[in-house]
Length: 429
Image (cartoon, rainbow, N blue to C red; front, side):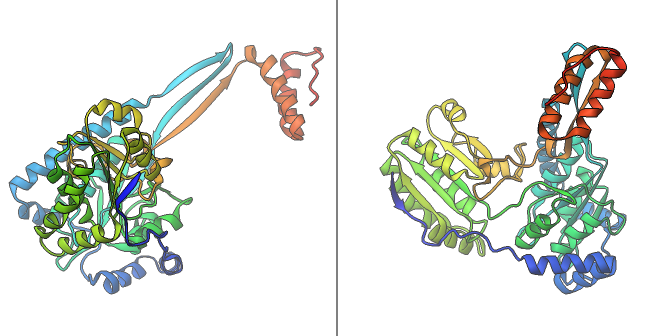
């Protein structure tokens, strides 16, 4: 394996703003809604309504063009249908393990979800669809959402999307104060059972600190993307796809692994020109990401390319190579997989159907991204009739005594005596 381009900026572990975020959460626990309003004034520079009113939603509908409404509806339909299919892929069941011993599984949606939609440089329409729609498809009873307000409030296109996708309550809040309001059930929301959605390091740290009292989707770092390409790939397409993901920010890694040196060198030569065509500030973000974080690796063949991908475990993994079925069966570590030259990552980011809230920083080695199943509790149940008691109670009593848990053993003993009076059982450890 040969590096034709290496990252010049160190990929160091993110420094979590733990102390600052913990102090903010503690102050909100104590000060409640008034403290949140104060933080909204200080950090979001927002003095308007926190709870988005029906009148504001009406104004948003009027502001959004019909073409954009149609595009949002198209994306919403794809994402909803995929999430519903995910929900149906996991089922409830019961099984009789032995005569009289019946066990089963239930899928119970959480009661309340809090969805964070990031603001900042971009209006994240797609994040609004991905989070709220998926919660609704899972059957969540109450879905609240928040997003940072700009000068005139939350952008109209985000408000319109949140309403279309079924948010019960929308808060004009960003950052830690938004996450806290969702978690603690402020401003007429219900305390969230799970918090989902991407955000900056303060949002990620707030979710991390609250985890346990509430569930979270994942702790996200900077987005990352990898392309696996062979000699059949088009260099210009590969270059533009790398640049398209690099525009996320200076700390977003992009990788190209290939077994074709001519392709690799052509892509390296083309990328600066692709970056130059972007408007600012996208151009500067992409340039810094490419210069500092990008890597181009020459491999000896597709198996070495696959090994490289599995080690990196990228958030987005795009295969532009022959025999896509081989790659689908071979690759093991990614947030979402994009097969074929026509399947650009941006399709998945915005409208294709699978969720774009995905594991970053190598976390795809052990977890997937947001799905309908994240909003479901997979719980089990069991029922025992006398027909199963003889063997089950004896095994339980003996294992319990071997562990030193006499109280457990006696709960089995009492049932044996009741149903099998006069019988002599060896119940020692």
